[in-house]
Amino acid sequence: MYSDKVIDHFTNPRNVGEIEGANGVGQVGNAKCGDIMRISLVVEEDIIKDIKFKTFGCGAAVATSSMVTEMVKGKTLEEALKVTNSTVAEALGGLPETKLHCSNLAADAVHDAIKNYLEKTKV
Image (tube, rainbow, N blue to C red; front, side, top):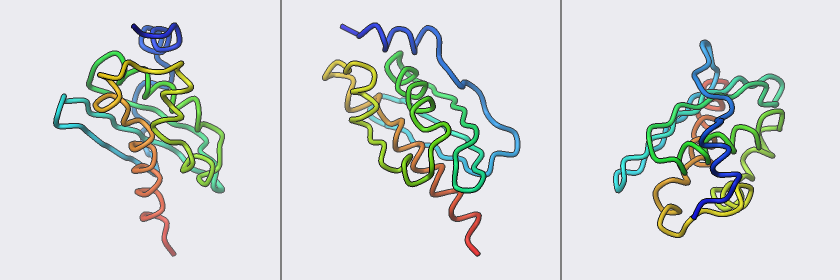
């Protein structure tokens, strides 16, 4: 049912935790099934230098959170904003149809964290 990549990112999630002093934080959730994702990031000179996540949810939610952190770490904000929930699912080798609606909020959480960063740094 789940790809090997989904299982790997669920059992060995990357970039778990929260960054003290993060300059961007985003949180999204899906009331339908209860998944909540929180992303904290450090941006320096328009580059995501560090990113961590905390996710409350199913295995697919943890896997998508882990994957998105790997996809955007080291990228510019512009590049990170191009990542979508669909590209995250594709990078994981797909998700079951029943999980797409509730567990793949990872890109939304990254976008929310970037929005928070941009709001904080407006001149």
